[in-house]
Length: 237
Image (tube, rainbow, N blue to C red; front, side, top):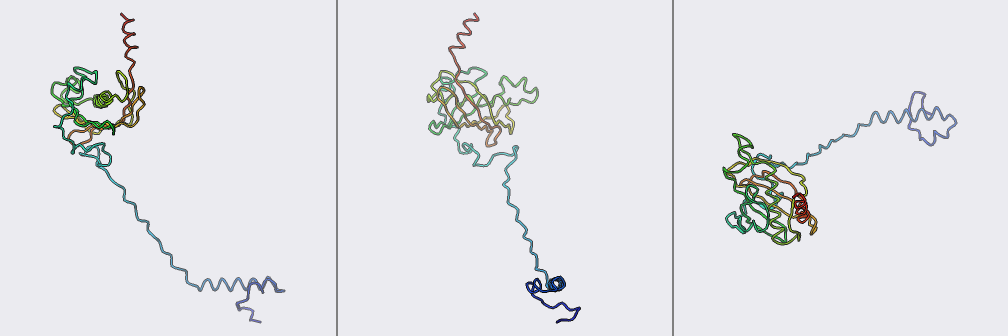
């Protein structure tokens, strides 16, 4: 038997079944605590999690956008290769005079649903006097109108919708990222996203000055009931 003050290494199971169980359990626990105090603590290693690199993109004021976001790279388009001039464009869209917002079409891929064209802005534009005096800026709604006319040109030229006339059905995700002024050439690129013949078409569009993205978004084109509108006009007379 060990001395009273000692803490012999007594088996735990033996202590549980001993007659003086409380005393022996107390000795076992004291022994194990003593061993734990003498045993060095394991070294704790901290792993610093490396931060993931977050891709940064140019701000909206810087020229250009990531190539993967472009429908077509404006730097690769030959703007001198005109597929349709204004006379040709007029055979497919109804807008005339001040509301003609496309000067030429330079790319047309009906299978992919991609089309590109431009509008040359002069110092004779109808909006210059009022938007804004002393600082003329092309209204954003006219950028959207130009994109709609470009989409309409392709749809009507190739008979994708099989309708007499198309009009705006809506705009979505539109962002203006730069300014357009008289003297600029506004390049527009559109891509078909969805099509329901005789009903609607949805297109994505991007607008550039040189290679700088100035506007992007999506537009919806719908069939305009020409005969219904004409009948309404006749009834007014």
